[in-house]
Length: 204
Image (cartoon, rainbow, N blue to C red):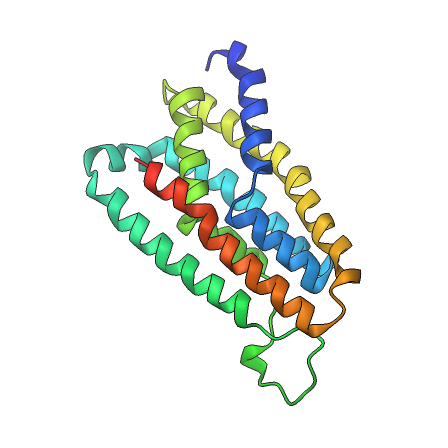
């Protein structure tokens, strides 16, 4: 890797990690619904899961996509389908404080570490970020360059995404009314779908 590009890589990781997208909108919703502490596994799952994804894309998966372009289309379809499902779950989840009469499957729960890590593989923005990062900042596909890109994202990503959880937690005092929380969740679900439209159509 050309280390002259390192400042640009850091700036790219900050900008791409901090802008709205499926991960950050889900963290915002989780912070508002459950608070900061219960969302910590979700945050670490995103940060570590994405770093691993970047490395795996660099060491081989990118070559597969280049050799078989149809995999882009398959991945888009799977990603969109799962994001629509997640948006529906967010929009229809009952508040965590809902009484015992609510069926357990309808009561929302924060993402676990594993769920958040696996989610990166069906997150269109994560794919776009990973492919761009490897193409631009590890163009020679050397192992050291790929590892460096993954590490930079791992270091930068966690504190950046934690700000979204903090913002969500700050909204909790305004969302004490279950009706207000339902409206908020519906808005988050709508934004979740809207956030991937430009990424999906430009992701080739």
